[in-house]
Image 1 (cartoon, rainbow, N blue to C red):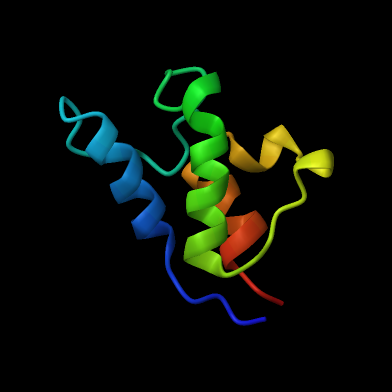
Image 2: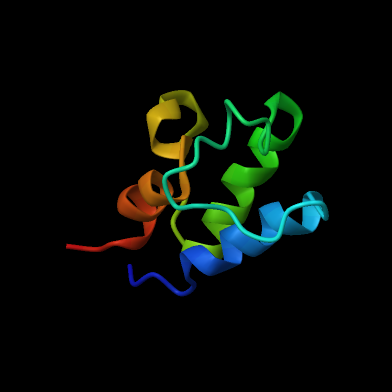
Length: 80
């Protein structure tokens, strides 16, 4: 299935939740910096799903794929 959105939509979603921030570096750890916490992680997964059109299996989520915008992009937006 072709990806329908871009990583910018995910970045914008995170920034809307953190008005004190202007930007997020692609390599910034979203979890360690608390930009994404346990309460918003599930929402983040849904945002990635709706942006990419790809269903993510919650039973097999690899947290490493959600550490940074770069890892999210590599895992879900770059198609072979």
